Image (tube, rainbow, N blue to C red):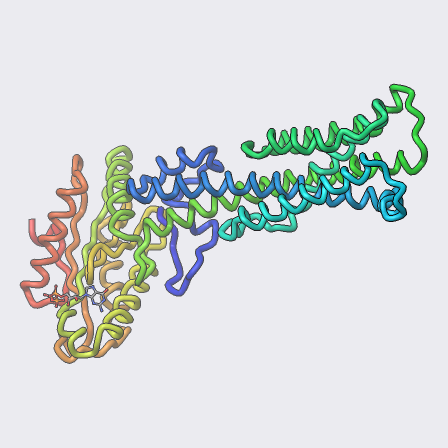
Amino acid sequence: MMPKKPNNAVTPSAQELIPNGQRRPIPQSVKDDIKWLKLPKELSHEFERQSEMESRVSSYAMACFGLGIWCCYSILDQLIYGYWEAIIAGNSSYLHSSLVIERTVVAAILIFAVIKYRNPSNKYISSTIKFLILLSISAGTAAAAAIHEAINGYNLSGTLVILIMIISLPINISLMTCIFFSFTVGALGIFLPIFLGVQLSKIEIFHRTWPLVVATGMGALTHYHLQLSKFNQFLLHRQMDWLAHSDGLTNLNNRRAFNEHLSKCLALAKRDNLQIALVLLDVDYFKRFNDCYGHEAGDQALISIAKVLQDVSVRELDMAARTGGEEMALILHDINFISLKETISQISKSISDLKIPHEYGVNGQISVSVGVATSLKNDNPKDLYIRADRLLYASKNSGRARATYEFDNP
Ligand SMILES: Nc1nc2c(ncn2[C@@H]2O[C@H](COP(=O)(O)OP(=O)(O)OP(=O)(O)O)[C@@H](O)[C@H]2O)c(=O)[nH]1
């Protein structure tokens, strides 16, 4: 069943976006989703291109953020250890000052890259979460640099920056990569030097512990972030699906959703040996209504009539749809003659209770003509639709504001 949508809904909820009552697992790939959604070619190409760009830009931004944070951390590190003071005092070695200059330059390049590649349309990934995830990566990197320093006596930071930059830029960082990288490297930062018998001072142990603590916490956040972005991707696809299947004015299902559901219902009816009813409704003298009261009033009238149809299609496989300008349809699954007649009279009564004045209408009020066809054993959607349409025109030709049933007009 297509979801029931309140008329004034702007953004439907996740539940409302599940089409045709099918609960589908979280999409595995954008391509799968495009196929499943049966989007028109131009739209699917655009959608594919955008998601690809979005993930690429995201990974660029992530990598840049990570490296940028790492550089900032390194500069801070230099400050903590008093290198700046040494430089200012003129005691610095060429290695220390060049290290600071190198990191400052890299940080500046990365800040520029983040500004350039940031993705304002990617509203689902909050920049705070992104920041925290990347902090874990940078923490791991800092630990790796520290190991190297502990073992070999000098810091490998410059090489690491370039290496990680080359590796991470084209990669879409996955959950496993992120957790594995940050956690393992962070842990190695503490334990490897100890195993290798390297003496660590208290400050050094602290220095190597925080990346691990941060990395573990960030691993959990990474997980949360990825779940969140997967869910948002899912929601985004549902929204697209909803847009592709709903009518913009009345929020009823559109012709595309109607066609799909009619085929499905007929197949189900055939399988279970049941009968479905197809009800077509057309607003009477609607052109004159528009001419007399204006298009805005015409739109409001259509919205009110749509609401009436929505209210009667409450069962799971029933569906109300707007199939054309002032034409709407109702698919009623597994229905008997008595319930069918009751439903149609309830619709007529509710529309009449709307009391929308129509100077040129039947009885001075807005009304609908209705054609009701019921499915035959081996019916197909097209034949059923044609029969309902003929019955609708029989209602029009016999005075409007009435319903014509198939069994009345065999
Ligand atoms: N306000 C409004 N009018 C619409 C919309 N879609 C279609 N229409 C109008 O609906 C009218 C349909 O007119 P016709 O097909 O001549 O039918 P009718 O005047 O209802 O006459 P009968 O069906 O014979 O009773 C046209 O004037 C369309 O402009 C819409 O979304 N909003």
